[in-house]
Length: 164
Image (cartoon, rainbow, N blue to C red):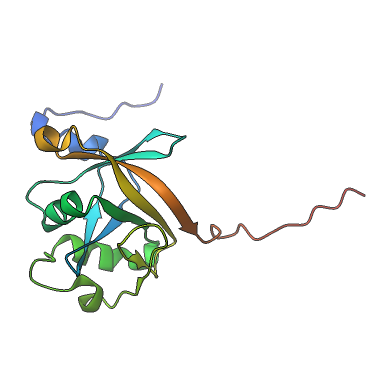
């Protein structure tokens, strides 16, 4: 029989560290001409058609107000090459710096919403606010993905299969 790991009690306030979903994403927004990027780990798929995604954005974040007011954002999926950048973005506030300039990221025009795609990211999902009923109480936004952009996953090059 396999040896079981020893478990210790810990504060229930730390449960989120075990349950936070992944992957970590970068959420970009634009409001009143200003752009911002935030690092986010609390997101979940809610529905497939329409494509609904839930994001928990703390009311203390600069992005919260920008996204609440603009009612749109872009969910960007970074690659592991951006790990240090993702951490840096999460440890700074866009209220004081332009994160695109500071982290040398490329803001690209979206086609369906007025928020910037992050050019260096593997995929970007343009989102419009679908339901804000849970924002006031839980800081939980429900977005509809209205446009998706992406590159093929690594190693997913087109393969031709011979039937001979």
